[in-house]
Length: 447
Image (cartoon, rainbow, N blue to C red):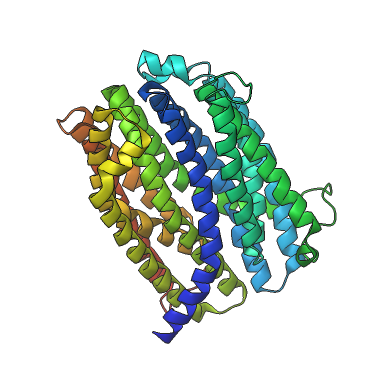
């Protein structure tokens, strides 16, 4: 128990700034939803649809860049700061290359959004917002690589401040471009896309400049940015990043598919889905920040050869995650209607969103558990079996069940969310069992 408490404290110290940064990133999306919601249900529904498709591409990039945190943490644990810098250099190359490809794909899909069979009024409103957030993929992925490197090297506070400033900047630009202040035209949903693109571009530029000038980063900062990339190092990163991308794609794709199914039910359920999903995503950021700290500390422990710390780190992380989830559930159950009203004034949207928040209160524990267990396994570079578990959870359980209950059945939006909850529970349990088996005293530890 002493080891658990000791490791929990260390995890919490690392997790606090990471979590604040993650929450700040999500607050940028929530700020958009609130400010867009003031212009009506149709723009809010259009933003939900556009962001649902965008998130598919974003999470693929997140998965590809996960090795930056894993291997930089492991290099730091082994005292190889120069090696950590090389993983940053290769990670940025992956961010820029994959980001450019994804932007091209999003621009192409933007001309074919009718394929998704959304309400005509939603399709009419979503462009050019969709194009603008697509262009933001390159800077946001570059920022992600730089932030993960900084956090892995024990410097999480400045990335957190950059994200907080980004939220303020995004809200200020929204006020200008969405509503047409300071002489700018009233652009509505398009204005939100402009604000997001500007905020993300400036954020990546600021964090790069800080890392370049920070004396504490001098030992790890790459010396030769334009030297040939190492094929062996890229293969090592992709061996982790591609399965993680698959896992995240299975999960994020399921939520995107749920968003599309909501559109089949109409603009009101789609708008309510965006309200409830924004709230659930915000609380999820606390669990995600905690999971990132757990994963980095797992990697550092493996790099240092201290395998006895693995289970105490995991137990402490899961325990804190359960406590946080219980707190979120109480808030959603007690204040769901008031929270929904904060986003929009439409009484029908508010009623549907309140119901969805009841379901969200139930699956918070499972959602937090699965993300912490996934991060712990990534710290051990165990990524292939978790990818299979995630596929089964979301595409064999969540989506078919949600379709039967919500689209074909009589439960509507709540039925779709119930399917998601069932998949989250399956993933949380099996990923936890997987970690427990890999960290037995007689089990060979992953490297």
